[in-house]
Every structure is written in structure tokens, then in C-alpha cells.
Amino acid sequence: MTMLKGVVPILHVRDVSATAAWFEARLGFAVDFLHGSPPFYGAVSRDGVCLHLRHVHEPLFAQMAAQEVSLIAASVEVSDVAELFEELSERGAEIAQPLTRHDWGGTDFHVRDPDGNVVSFVRYGPGE
Image (tube, rainbow, N blue to C red; front, side, top):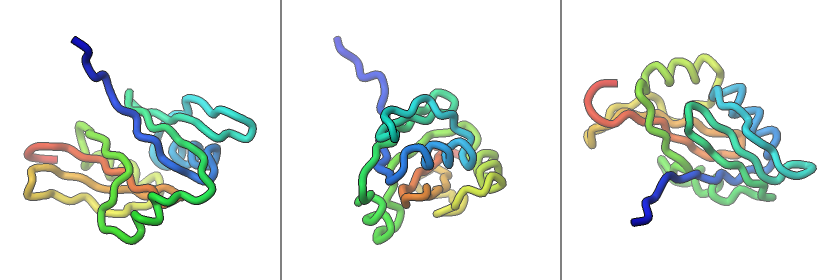
């Protein structure tokens, strides 16, 4: 039987190189590859979690995210959300939503990339 093995969110950005550098500096991701000259596609990763970046002239999803509360482009499950929140805050990431414990049983925070894409970092279950 065929099994699903994973998913890779694709963020739409205006400048793939600049966004990859931002993920590296602000979120501690490594730049896996940049494709094209200038790059129109790329990937960043951290601890086995990968996000792809695709060039668009106008990131429409980010425009919608600016109008909606908590419109998230990608959600990343983490082992210690409070520790990561402190790390990314110290790195200067734009925090779109501070560390929040929810009634549905999770704790998360959101960051916003330079194009307005919102990425959530979450820990499910009790505690942080």
C-alpha cells in the first residue's frame, strides 16, 4: 500500500535569495538550494523540516494574510515551543502572534516573513 511520506509548503516570495537569507538569519534555517539566475525557486530547512520558496511578482497569499487573522502559510510542530519563541525573538524575527496557549490543547506563536507569509510554530498537548 502506498503511504504518504511528508509535505513541503511552498511560500510565494518576491525575492527568493533575500527570503532564504532571512530564514537563515532570523529563523536559523539552512539554505538547501537556490535554482536559477536570479533564483526563482529554492529551499530552506531546519531539523528535517523543509520549506520551499517560489518567486512571484506579487505574493497574493500574503496580501490575504494581512486582511485575515491567523491566516497561516505553514505550521511547524516543535518539541519546545517556548524555547524556540525565545530564540527567534532574540534573532529579530517579526512575531505576528506571541506565544499563546489555546483551548484546543496546543501552544503556538507565529512569525511573519518579509513578504507577509505567516509561519506558525506549535507544540500540541499540555505544557510548553
